Image (cartoon, rainbow, N blue to C red):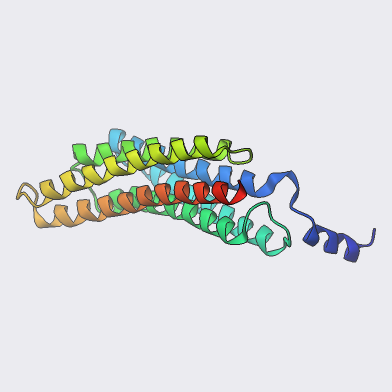
Length: 214
């Protein structure tokens, strides 16, 4: 087969080895690694090694979405709608970027006041990224009931995160913290909340795909 014909066939035929599903799983792995890194930083304190790891995870996540879009651009037939592939990949990358930004900002802000609300928010991110792992482990052969149940669980995690954010906001404006620490903590809480919201958005997007495929 000529190179030209081979190129045409690779464009027409679906990507081999379920490449998009593998890329989703890889993207989710970077989300989880970032969440675990953030929790470790809160427990042990920030180091230069932690900052280097955060940047490494962010870079790896960016490479993952770049590869996803490249494969998407060269594929005529895809296992799910192109818009859904792009949306899910973009959201996964956003999760990692928001968490790694928070990791690095702890160093930049010289944040020493690690609050219980911050620790609780970190745990919700661990729970959410673990749930994402399970979602994508079953994405190739999903059932509506299973994915709906996982989406409901993700909603519970996201709601818990909302409650933690409310508690954190009340504490920040209670007068206990000086103005500079309020700004630092509020900024980090906001990025973590955005990451958690994106976890739920990914779960919602997967359920939508499964419903369209059923």
